[in-house]
Image (cartoon, rainbow, N blue to C red; front, top):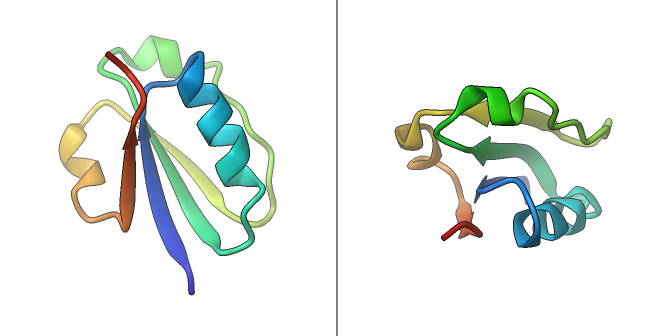
Length: 72
């Protein structure tokens, strides 16, 4: 089953979650949210299994299968 997953946050625990998600074969899309676009510009996880999206618009996460909140 193809899954579309989002993560709110990009450092510390969020980074560990993102790395774990990249190991899952059933993930087709990974969305990473942070309100400041410049913080996401260096985010880079290479995978041919899924596509990585970064966003500053929280509503982009509303249609996903799961969202991890990993930011205070």
